[in-house]
Image 1 (spheres, rainbow, N blue to C red):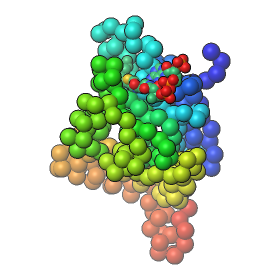
Image 2: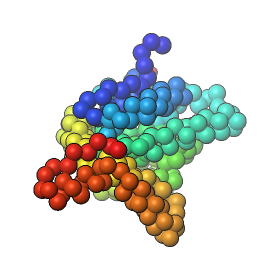
Image 3: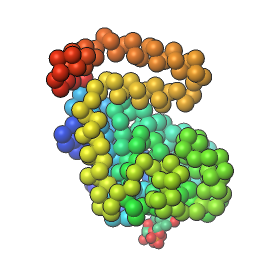
Image 4: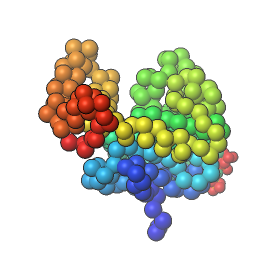
Length: 260
Ligand code: CO8
């Protein structure tokens, strides 16, 4: 296939990553590998960017989940291998150095919602639809959706969504804490871009360190979290940007951050 399943462009220090597997951006192995390859290339070009926006091509979906058409061939062994690789790829997105914003339109279901939960922040169009419909197929969210949802949903709400496979509106997703903002239809990219611009003005190394602390704090005790905060905060004092921030404040001017 010549058409790439995922690709990116860089515009004003924002990398826009597009998943493009028509019609629903179903996440088969090849599409997930294409996403991994894009993030590998972005990592090589990390000095050129400050924020990533992840979205789905086409009118219909951010991503409607794993590719069900590949499920018939799965065995316990192949599923184990695919899930292991899938978990690696989702973690690459989740732990990318710079903030990753999900721009969501249309269906965001199953593995698609699980991928959206790897983004740091999610803005969705009011027509977007969310859910974990896996029980319709007699499986459950296996790409980390359960583990990650626990930081957004109450246990009862998570079980309600997972046990019924119910598809919910953007308004309900916002109320539950699955997304951070609702925007008008067709406006998710614009809204994410303006969020990105607000971050780009700030000290990038401070944001990257904060992301590391927030992501890792979930797995740490409070004393371990404080230790990590101390380490990463102290390391920032060795950067030019940290001194520039303080100097600009004292000199009453806008800081010029260079990411070093
Ligand atoms: N996989 C493959 N094809 C899909 C998927 C999908 N997830 N979703 C939609 N399609 C295809 C349809 O088969 C159809 O194809 P065709 O035109 O060739 O018949 C086309 O997209 C359009 O779909 P519909 O005609 O169904 O469109 P509707 O607007 O009527 O409905 C829905 C849209 C509600 C999104 C519906 O298509 C649907 O329910 N899709 C399935 C959603 C789903 O169940 N997702 C969860 C999948 S399981 C999962 O994600 C768990 C991950 C665990 C990891 C596994 C790794 C091994």
